[in-house]
Length: 601
Image (cartoon, rainbow, N blue to C red; front, side, top):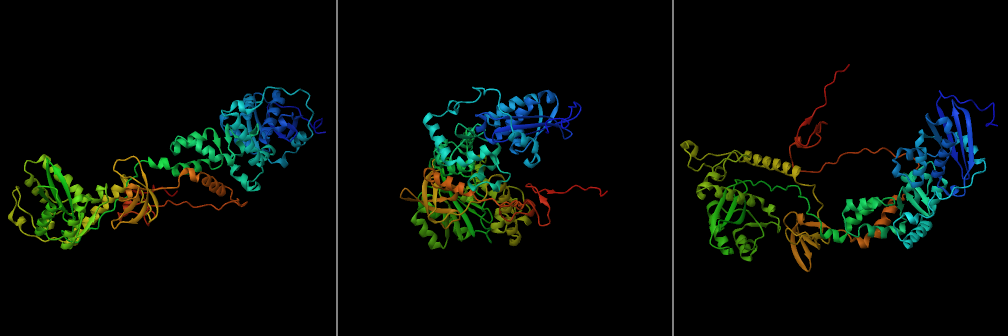
């Protein structure tokens, strides 16, 4: 009755056009409307091939059928098409090449028309739904040669592997294939738990020749994912390259996360990783008085060996010539220096053979000195001495008189405190080559509390700029028994496996056993290792699927408030941090961001 007059109206070219179309399991239906009045109707049965289409393909076919049938009405005009299959809206928003091949061909047939596809609930689509279920029989024979006989001819894979892929898909993804063919539910929680990870990709999933595709990418069944991971990483490419390689041709929910974890767990990749980024600077505690804490180092200049001693408090430098590098010679020079300035509480050195000798250990014990050494291959741990050596070498390279150069350094005020090293150590200005008033050469006291505050402030500023430019975030502490990767030699590109035996007395330093030998290493040269990829590949997939298949509640999730976590740093000024207690935002360079003043109109 609805297809006969007086129900049908005449077509008015000046009015907008709407098409309602729908597809059932056996037929297609469409109706052309203007101002909610029907203009024309159409329906037809699906061919034997078309009945095996996925539901999204049937719905797309109904749009193609409607446009071809109503070509004389809609060609050259803008048309709004309504359909009860919501994923079609997303399909028309995506680039043509990102959709499945069959849908690509249908969209190409629609290039003639100016279409806007919108979703409408099924209960509001009575006419096209009725026509699709009361369809007319097919009068024209089915055209052959338009569809692929077998996708095997279009996929670069052996016949045996393709057959295995079909069998695994049929056994493990049969429920997914059924949902794709029959149509997706309106809500995610209406799906079985094992299919919920596919919800976000539902508009791109199709079944062809017994294999599920997401666009042009093969959906890999769970039992074949471990093998595919092995092929993806067979050349040991990095995380980004492995992901790019897989994303071109393969898909399964959570694939990128599994690939990332697999590469991180790969033993061979762990052997050849890049150096770790520097850690945040850890300043030493400022001494309370001169020569409480000193640092020593050996260096060579113009063929002569020297021993250097620098005071952490005053930055006063002592340099003596060495006839040889024997431990006894070094001890004698240190004794002479201690006799002039006093015995220090703490002596910091590197792990050179002279400082690590038993004789040197006995010397420190007899003098009541706490000897602290830096980790091997970590010269910045003895940074005070290393910096002093650099200063002396630069001075001597430019000066004609080495002793006069040292005197000028010792009598030059430090930027951080305003006093020279000699003033901080001796309480007076030594006479140098510059004409100086006699009053300035007299002993003068300084306030040690203010000096210590200025030294602390200088270290605080130094740490802020070092951490901002060069360092990464602090790393987690290692525990005895932790498996690690260690750089056995400086500059080595290969990381050797080892086990943490214990932590050393020095901060960030550990004793590591590797190859039946024990090494002392700074955490800068230790990387916590993970299980080998060959042993953990299946476990990664199972753990990730267990996480993805957690049931989703039908209720809308509560909004989550995201906050930016800020790493702890040294006691830098408040201006160096992101947000003050008053709510002001501070840039990383210390500038306060002020909101604009606006007129209250």
